[in-house]
Amino acid sequence: MEQPLLSEKRSEIEENERLSSYQYVGRTGSVIPTASLAGMDVSIEEIRSATSFSTPYPPSIHAPLISSPEPLPNEPAIPNQSPYAADYGPYSNDFQRQLLDEVEIRELLIDHIGHRCCWGSRPARTWKIHAVEDCNVYVGTLETFLEEREVIRETEPYLGGKIDGKDNTPELGIWELDLRSQFPVLFVPYKETRVKIPNSETTEKCSDCAGRGDIPCPTCNADQEPGFYKENQMSQCPACYGRGLIAHRDGSDTICTKCDGKGKIPCATCGSRGLLKCKTCNGSGSLLTRKIAVVKWKTLSTRKVSATSGAASVPDEIFHRAKGVQLCNTQAYQCTPAYFADSFFLNTFSSDVIADRASVPPTARVICERHTISVVPVTRVTMRHRHQSFSFYIVGYSREVYLKDYYPARFCWGLCPCLEWLKV
Image (cartoon, rainbow, N blue to C red; front, side, top):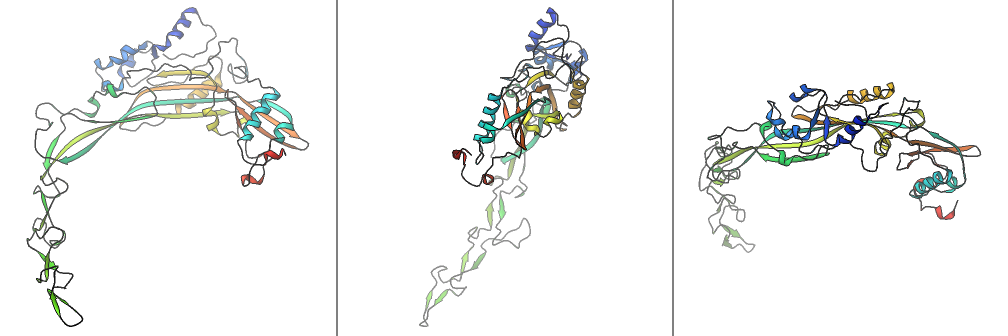
């Protein structure tokens, strides 16, 4: 059962359970039959052996590797603090607030400007820092990891030999295939594999040649009825126009060397045989057809951002790639909204993220979901000089600078070489 990662009281037993979260996946409501045991922990061994239950799910959808719900690399851990702060509930600006002094702010802005052609650094170096405002942003994600299976048919010329048909063993259904050896790590963006379905091969008559192995020549038998052809069809010689002789300017004639004086030549396509070998069956008249399972594993993502008015002008993509503090990280067959004891805002925000769950194609089945909520520190800096001012943002613990359209020292809109060397 999913529980919030922050609680007012954490006993020694609860702390031990938190440290052992790398071995278990919380269970919530799920379409998988084992979800009827709600309230218990699901071990990796139980998931691996879930195929022993009477369930329509195949062995391959039970993950051989269960990724632990731990913060991303280089992402700050969740601080253990109590009592909580105010503002947006218990999880607010006290989460490792970015403490930036004037020197750091100017260095970050100068470095950002240095990567822009025709931007001068004078405002960043000399303008007064008028205001520094903290406007943290909350980012919620729901990742749905699913497996999609489709069947396609492949054909090739049948040249004889034994086929893998239904004579001895029934053909397996697409969701009966055991693909555990192909199963990827959970929440990979995309992986595709193709597997031949056992006992699915059949032979059939080639439809292009009606099983004959040959088709009428489209050049010399173009007007024939389907299935009929004529041999020894000749065409007019293009050199002598059917005369068999080549006329010269002095009035003499010579025998046409192209047709040997006959005025006609064999069909250039089939040699007047009237037939061509069928390319579809390679002349065998039969085709071998087999079913191929196309299996795709992919992660569907739902993302939401809740920003204060001070950070509303920053694109959501900036927040999604920024480093922040994870307030919630739950993984289950089907995630439910997170619960924060002292924050109605975060409870509502989590519910909104879950409600926007990505739609699953009818040919796919959900394997696992992961729900996270993070707070991204955002600092809005306003610089002023006389009656001019501009603002920029320092986002996340990676301290990415975002500067919107206006900057007071832009020259020629980037159309000329940079004038930074002038120190203007």
